[in-house]
Image (cartoon, rainbow, N blue to C red; front, side):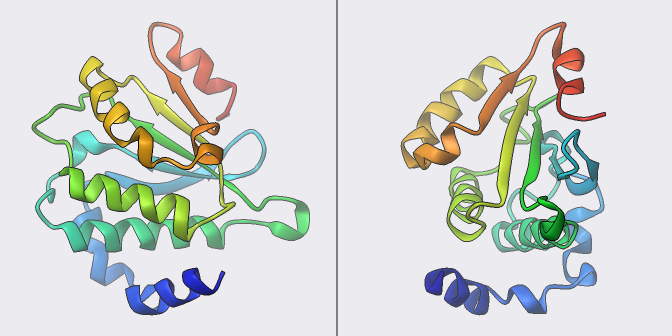
Length: 166
């Protein structure tokens, strides 16, 4: 907990504003929208919409800003203390994928700085080469976090998503 508090201070979490992350968010690549079937806020990540992949710090600021929005939508008194993250890989390609440095930083932020906030992580329609990427970062994924990851693809992807999102 102390490490996360120190990270939040050094990262400047409380100083982030919508205006600061507007450029990185204008394409809708990462945003909070609605809730899942359990009432958890849903954070959508759509890497195919990436237009600022060389802005490492800006991308991380935008992610943290969106995570904070999702956390503000939690309803812990009513048992909603986790979120659903949907990584929609539709039209994802090597051209629009973030650099490995950014991907590893995103993973670190998700599992180290927002502990116990992830209820489920859905990866939708990942292309075959995403498996190579996932296998490259898998050793860095905490075991508890890895158990929350579900891949969804194929012709029944929409039906499978309906199990999580109304």
